[in-house]
Image (cartoon, rainbow, N blue to C red; front, side, top):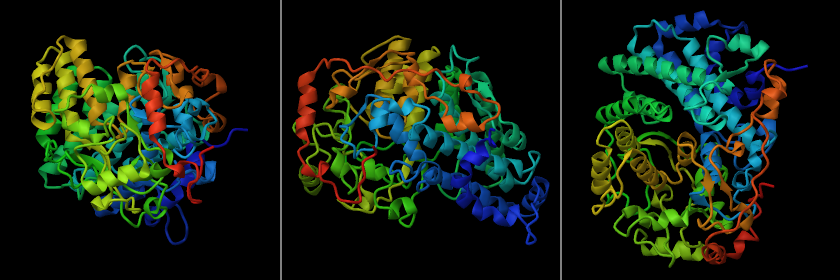
Length: 562
């Protein structure tokens, strides 16, 4: 017999987050408070909704939220887990698979098994955000005229849209040409009680995107009204009007609605107080705090958060080169060698990575000594600074970027190029001003300019969990030949449209959802076969460059993902 749908699966991850709302869920006698009663509470005191909104954003960075479902996993820490998985799926974040990088399943696509822990982490985490969002949305009268309440309602709507945007691109192919294909179940504040008992079928891609746009359209209107009345977000963990425009720009870009995407990106730029980081801001390790002037939206991490006090179960532990953590024992993360070589020396971003001589102009003497001490190979990143810029710190309390203003300029450039506008000028102005003063766009024509913008996106957002979504929306393949992968078993040439690129719905969801059968899942695809590397010398160079014996004898607190 099938069990209850999503909320049964997610309950262990949500109990702690919902605890802050217990005063709205129950009365002293233990009787359940209805949504109508919650609406009355919010109407009388809109600040009561803050607990529910905080529950949404707390879900973005939770320590092992899936522990009860899959046990202790050191790659289970909220949305940054999704960032880590998807970056490893692509071909721009090169890694050596020695067990202690916790990404081997993502590197060889065994994560596509519907029994994989990674599959369940993604599904549970994104639907947990949706569940929290639905609780906020369902408890607020959509006809409210109170500005603060409008702000809170917009948070739920925009966060729900973001979650569906992530899910839609992982569990189905790109929007264009797949509008009628099965996507993911739609759970909203309106149908959640029915879904809990009867389940929900997979909605079509079109239906999911329609919901995203409807949510964002309403959120933008609500945030405009709230802003006009002087209601502003407390900090960058929350979604303001500029971020909402940015989210809609992403959705429209994914749908290839290029005119709308350009307009939304322009609105995001105009509404935001953020400015692109100058060359002098990023000619050193950075991207560590929401206080940086180019961040629009981010996950704010406190030193007391469990992901930090765990020491190593957090994103900087796995990714960071200059802070202590897993990266010290797994060889770190490198950039695609071909992508690195596509950057001229005048591009400040080239210094975000060690060159073939294991040096970077962005490092001071102490940082360079750390890179040499750990024994990182060529092309290892030095993009992300350690917490508080304390070299070799074990306090991994870095904030995590979710949206930077640079993305809006690149969306605008691509969308203008694809819709008959002057995208080349937009691209050149941005790159020349903020990244490479000598830059001249080397191509012309819509698709060629689109690919050039994509190259810049791959560089600009390296390590920020963005690149996989570009691969999917642009219908690209995954060709790792010549990229510098040290493990021959990880060198693939996967063609665009290959079924292995799409995740399968978790087995637990199929079993729990009364409206789904195994036949409703995405087709199973074999793990891709390795292919010969077109640049074996480069691959061997990367493998031999990492010499630190600690990769073989890590401290006892580190665990292999196998």
